[in-house]
Image (cartoon, rainbow over all chains, first blue to last red; front, side):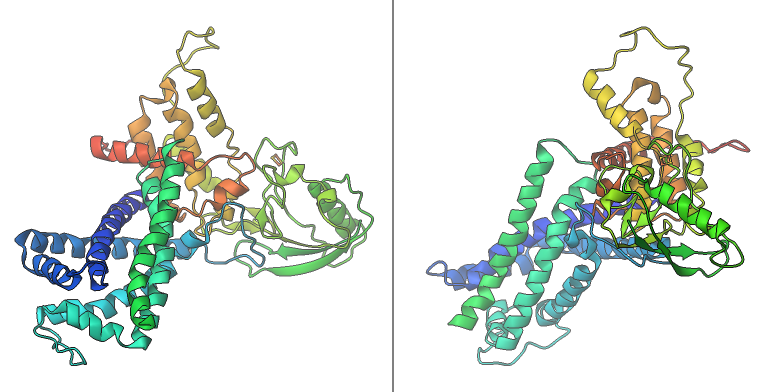
Length: 220
Length: 261
Ligand code: FES
């Protein structure tokens, strides 16, 4: 398969994951007391996400997206390392060089670590592979994500780790947004600058949204 | 002006290679970078500073910024510190008196070093052979407006065709990717009617060849655009990605026996 085809797969899967993340955030925000019965809303959303057959199908798509994205990105990266066996003695930053893109593979590795932690805390529990945790908040069953989240966020160490990893995710997303469109061949004198701005907004607001949750628990 | 030069010396493609330091004095600020190296080589040959006598090998030809032969990686930038300029067009006044200047060859697996600062860029020729041409007979110079091409498209094709194939994009890219070069070549044909008959075959063939020769892929850092002496834009890369996707979805090469492809 040519490098360009691999890049198309990386970007399609990546853009799908970007969309999914928005949905994930919108549910997560209900952990915070943003509405009077936020807890109820959160539980309903989780119930829907864990039982609806439509979501079951989407879950497969989601896992496929993760695997395609990671597999092709890593293969490309290895090929890229091989393409320059010996580096330069002096290397200067170029005018347009994007540090976010340069670091994408490394920020990606941190995001993967975060994903694994996240799976251990929630998805594996839901699947019954890991038993529900014990803590200050009694976890009713393996679908009780609300109390599981509270238990985690009551641990300041977890909160700090969460915040740091979400910031790294923000770096990854910053690269992802515009690069995803470029790899699909979508570059336009008017839309590309807009996409770049949207990329900035997305990669700042979405991580901020996620961070607001542990921050709330750290402060209160 | 006086300079300290740290130059990559490597006897042949197999040898290990290392940096050697040379001091050079009394260089006129109006001297070009390559002339400065000529002066160094004259000294190496004439004054026999070191034995055996071995002048520094570097590529050059037109020395007026149009052939793409000169290819030095100077102080961390392909073609030196100036924007939109080949190294043959860089003058020593762009440096400070007493500067240390590090000169390296292009570094990429697909561009093996021949000697010192000279690299073998025939990989680019091989990519061109895969599809960087048209088969339509275009005859002599056509009358004005006999082939209808809008000004806008003619300009874009011309911008792409400004590529001199020097390889600075490969040298600058952290992945040693040739995407900007290949994109410029694909673009210049994709934008003009004469290039259309082979458009679908061309993009797939050139991209596969690029991969096969061991160039990296694009991770959208755009260092290539910043370092290109002809200011080729990365929008050509997007155009190539687009052409490639279109071609992949609508075109499959028929297997030829004993033919090209
Ligand atoms: S020597 Fe021809 S472009 Fe520099």
